[in-house]
Image (tube, rainbow, N blue to C red):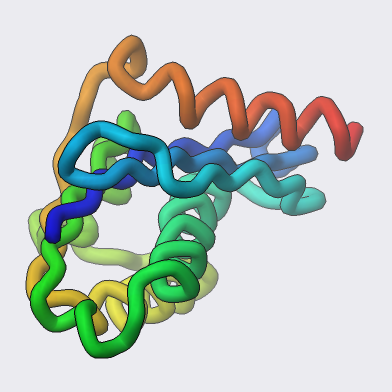
Length: 139
């Protein structure tokens, strides 16, 4: 089975009120879960990581443990920083983001393969809308 995560995080001010949004779809394009969470006062980069982490939390809840080792996950984000850090093209320097990356690596390790892909913002509008809804609720 293959799953697709579109994730986005944002902060109004940096740091400022922040939110995470994600849409998880199966290989047939059906939406199987959505995430929209207010994160309090955080940085934009923290929120970007948190959006993917929360999406994986949902995926781990939905996909039985016995099927995870046979499942592939494609993460699509408009955060070039997170994508390049997860693909080991950029180092993670900030201690707060190192913790976020470690959490994400642990979650991703439950699946056969996880691919991180950078997409233009226009191709991530569903996740962006969910992140903004979260920030609106929390403001």
